[in-house]
Image (cartoon, rainbow, N blue to C red; front, side, top):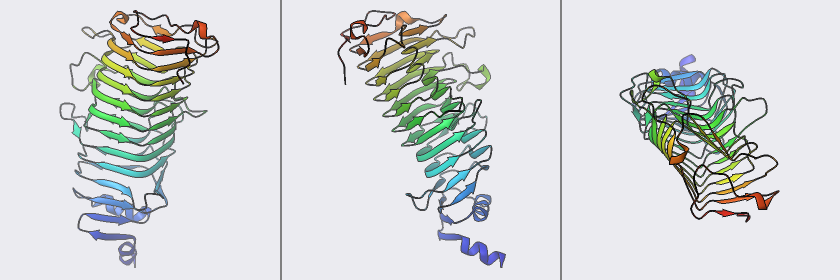
Length: 349
């Protein structure tokens, strides 16, 4: 009878495709996983706490994209270690106490995992307090996170540690009362050549975009990197609320362009240096251009919070449009260097 039950619950649609219809059959399917498998999961509630290691070309997706399976609870909903060319698509995740999704290189710092795609995944209520992330990524290259929604987290919505040549696009991040969010997107630990674009941030932590950060030296990828982040592009995003729109923290080269900033509550940008090991570069070489920046002088008296050990004189400002809604005549910001072709006091909306 038990064999018949699993025969009904797990449908082998093809040699490389498995259809799962309940939690018991999901455990069976994961136990027997082989490379190049597509796991299609039927609607319903499933427990978290799943771990997959070393399986290449694995796809896990909803059987019915408009009615995704919902993975509830556990420390991590899913933990993937050294799973090259993994695809996760049309899933729901909520209520984890560590991270929603955890993806890593298994501690092999010199050999990143490549080719992961995460798209149309909904993640909520992670933590709620402490360093607990919606999506935690360590040692991944050529990673794409597309059209995901993250609501309520304790640490970062998406946290990159030593990730490279990657894209975050079309995602939504919404903070939630009772969750100690520090950032929505954090790129640190030697991360480089990352694009964050077309995302929407609403009260998404203290630093919606934390471009850089603070990482213990043993966790950098590659080892010996002397920047938290380098060559980071953040473009065409909407950033509403939060203490600031973006923080540049130990970054060596970034572009912040074409974004819309709406009503930060203390500063507009921060320039900080939190990793101060010997030989580590100061925060430097950031281009801020073509942004629409709408704020209120009743909230923002100091546009830039500049910390010690940074090089704000290497920043460049071009063609930004600054508008203090409550005091248009006081729209011109005090910048660390002169701006080229800035527009002040005209509502850019």
